[in-house]
Length: 263
Image (tube, rainbow, N blue to C red; front, side, top):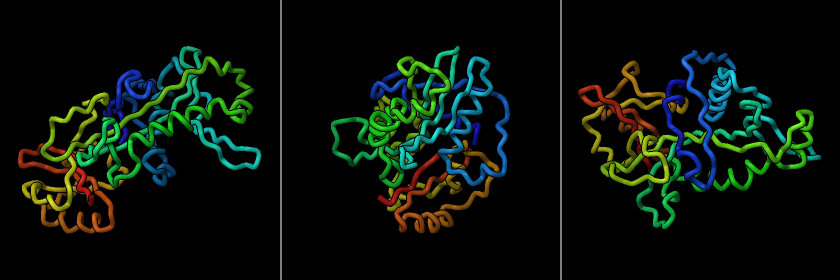
């Protein structure tokens, strides 16, 4: 999982999207250590731990806070800061995101970013970007946040706010020439196609990874199954309005990732 995370590029470069500045932690060759408690975590929390681990290997970074919960006077949660740290003694607030987005060619949109949706047509890219701009990043300047962090004696006007937004992108089957700008074309890792068209994949072998394996690079050492076997299992997913991720293997052992959608 850690290798797959590190090999995932940032979804855009610099401030190309919504003027949100990307931050790329330094890659590390150190082995990520996970304890038994990690098995209970959802994928997003794994990624937050991966980023924290990378930062801890950087001698120029000092972590101040991780997953800082901000509550109001009624002890209700207002939000959470993913990471607050010093880089070369300069404070940075970092929000961490890892997503899987499919290009929905059937959408009638003028805004290019609106074409990108989650595998089940929820959690769209535009929704996440708006949430970052209007809720998650402004939380730093909430009075309750400043009160919690006052012991650091930080000048909040000097804290830089950045995102580490990584994603895997999937284009419609047979439409590999789509211009994904302003997003990073290196994030494109595979296809998606509707369950009604799954016969196009009849010459592949299949593996249906669990959600945490979605981060991983496809590899040989799994229980591959035939198209016929996989089709029945995939249909059980799509009948429940779930779009499973599949690893596909060609006869020459070339791998590809593919979402089979219900929509």
